[in-house]
Structure formats: structure tokens, C-alpha cells
Length: 248
Image 1 (cartoon, one colour):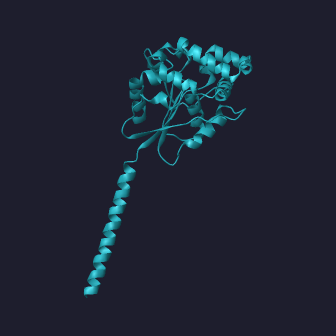
Image 2 (tube, helix red, strand yellow):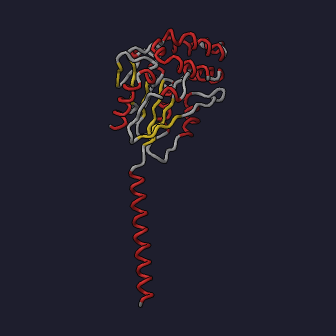
Image 3 (cartoon, helix red, strand yellow):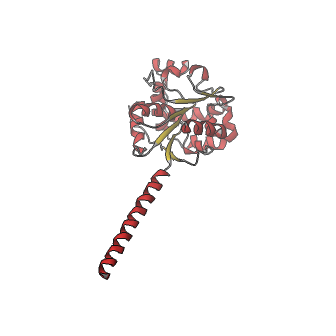
């Protein structure tokens, strides 16, 4: 009789332990943070997002650029970078400039909760004339990667003076770029074939963007005095808008 009581007590403890384990697991999964993947611009890296602060329910993950294979188009490169995304969890994608174009491509074959593009174009119809011209007359193919890098270092502070608010970060990011990467991604941008895009993509743009002027872009949010560099120079405002979109 005593032995039977001991067995019963042991079984009860096991059942209780199991219930507690299940409850703990449910609690943990319930508190699981949403992953937000950030894709930087062509001349930038994760430092571009150093002033972005997400809601406590989100986890920031940075997509790291690799050098694309010769001949890859935007879609092929997007598929390669998408391998860094854990699609088994809830996730969203935020892309700036080139990163926004890649995020637009990813929206076609992934199933993110949200896709947000900033200071970018969602298809080539949103490019200014000088970009479209170089698809027809591909002058860029004659320019070596090191010349593209040098040109960017000279023109960036002239075309987008807002970068001077944190010029050391911008200079450092551009300096770290591989000329082959710059050459191949430049070709990728100028030969981008996309003429339409997923309508669920949310677009944040600056009214003072000189690289991709707002007048060519179909945006959802227009930031007053926002430049092409505003992901870094206007981190507070961009954070507010990203969080607003993610919570909708």
C-alpha cells in the first residue's frame, strides 16, 4: 500500500513537471521577438542603421553583402542574400537604396510580414533619367571599379551634403567597399529590368533626396528635408516611421 502511494506521488510529480515545461515553452514562444532584417545601401554597411531603434518586440539582424558573381542580375543577387534570412520565424525586411531594390525582389519569392524600402526605387520607372539613359548607352561598363569608388568619394559630399552630419561614418563605410562589388552592383542597378512591384511594399522617401529624387517615386511617407542619407542622419524620424509600419 505504501509502495502504491509512492508510485502515485512520483507520477503526479512527473505530470506536474510536464505541465510546467509546456507552460514555459508556450510563454517563451509567445514572447519570441520578430526578426527585422536590414539591408544597407551600395556604399554602406550595418553602420548605416546605428541610429535606428526598434520597438522592444523586434530583433535587428543585418544582411551582409557578398561580392556578386559576374553577370548576376538584381533577382539572382537577392536570392543569394536571402539565404541569410530565417524564414521559419516571423520576419520583416527593411532596405535602403540598393538594399530597397533587393528587398523589392525578395518580396516576390519570400513571405515577409512587412517590406519597407527607404531612399530607394521599387522598379526602374522610379529612376531619374540619368539612370535610364545608361541602360540604353552603357557608359558605366567602360568605368573600372576603382574609378567608381573614387568618383563616389568625390561626388557623395557634393550631391548629398547631408552626409556631412556624420561624414566620418560615411567615409569609412565607402572606404571599406570592394571595387569589384561596386562595379557589379552598379551594373546591376543600371540594367535592372523590373517595371512593377508588390503593392504591399511600404516606401519612405526624403523630399531632399538628390540621388533618387522624390518626384519620380511613388512613396507612402515623405520626410521633410530628408536626404538620401537620412537612415543615418535622421535616425529618430526613420525609427518612428519603421516602428509605426511594423506595428500596423
